[in-house]
Amino acid sequence: MVQWFTGECWRCDDHDVNVTWVGPAQSEGQHAPINLCAPCVDAVERKFWQHVMGRAARPAPSATGCTSSVGRPHHRRSPVNQQPREDGTPVQLVSLSFTGLGIRADADGRTGREGWRIISERHPRLALAAGACAVLLAGLAATAVVRLL
Image (cartoon, rainbow, N blue to C red; front, top):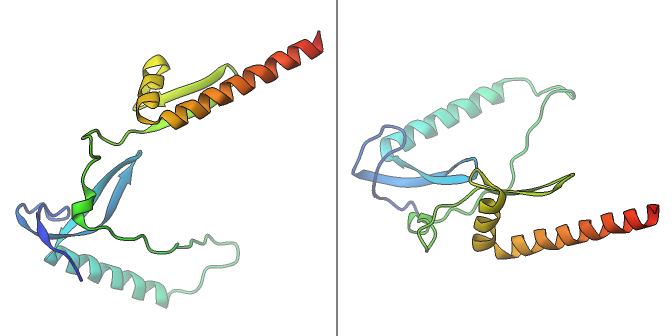
């Protein structure tokens, strides 16, 4: 059963129309719900079937050609559950990279102490694991230096 609610259609930009959630958009770790009105859902469905029927008429790709696979369908959540996090903060892009000089933290483009502060506030277990890795790497480096001397 399709759940309809009042919102903005992403395809035709109509406001205050009945729309339904058709899937998430994702870019650089940020997510947004894609909502379409009934005429746009019909248009996308027609385009889908045209694509599928057009592919059925084409020959199968060669053994050296590119192939793709599709996983199991993603469980569709209702639009009510598509709200931002409970504390109102946006989802952040967080990364830790191991370099020759140590561990580099990056949170929404902020690096250094500011990046570590954001990561330790929002993801304390990740910060703890990164700290443990840093201690382990420092111990390995110290052991290597002692063995070489």
